[in-house]
Each structure stands twice: as C-alpha cells, then as structure tokens.
Length: 78
Image (cartoon, rainbow, N blue to C red; front, top):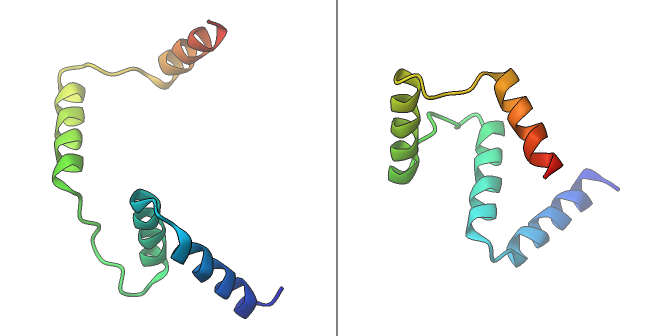
C-alpha cells in the first residue's frame, strides 16, 4: 500500500471518529511529528492532577517500582 493510499485511509478513519478524547490524542501525536510542536499545554484538570501527584510525592506517599509490581501481581491473582 502506498503512503498516499495509507494517508487517505487514515484521514477517512479520523473523519468518522466521534470520540473527542481519541481525536485529541491523535492530534497530539501529529503535533509531536510537526516542526511546529511547541510546549504541551495541560488542561486545568490535568494541572490539578499533576499538583496532587507532586504533593503526594513530597509527603512520601508513593510506591517503588518493586512495590507496585508486587501489588499488581497480588491484585491479578484475585
């Protein structure tokens, strides 16, 4: 399949999408490939979540990778 045909199929698929989050993610991926990609701007909700995560980290409320893996394996067995 040629790049032109592939691009047309992708464009047609995007036109049919109704999921706003998915379209936003596709747009973000395209921006990464673009020379015009600048600083990624977070939404107010994303900034809130990042701030909460930073506060938890500073308070020592985090897991090491090993702890998280162990916790995940225990959860998976349930």
